[in-house]
Image: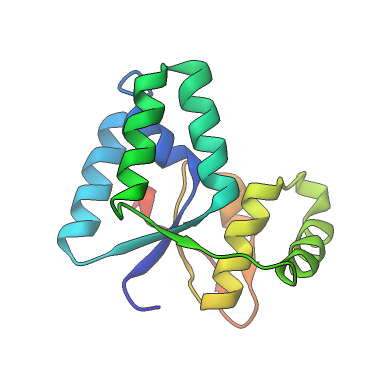
Length: 144
């Protein structure tokens, strides 16, 4: 998908948590990307992770602002099916040595299904190792 990047939990948390060390970068990078007609896609597990972290570590209002932003189209949400779980299991086995979590595995599923090799993530290490079949490694636009 042209001009579409996967967005991981870290930048989304930073976007809505003013005390996060990546808050300013997240606002700037997301704003820049949007101005260039860029779109973001994520998964329900990533949204769940962000909502949990915002409520637990910031405050309920940040969580509600985030959920409203998602509802208003701030990010597209990839619709996973039962069949995708088999692919996620394969991905988690492949990267078991990195202790890949379910949310990251869904990001890799999105990359594979939609042939996207761009990601916004604060996770420099793992997303530099993960790869997409036929595409190679991710380009992490958050640190460009």
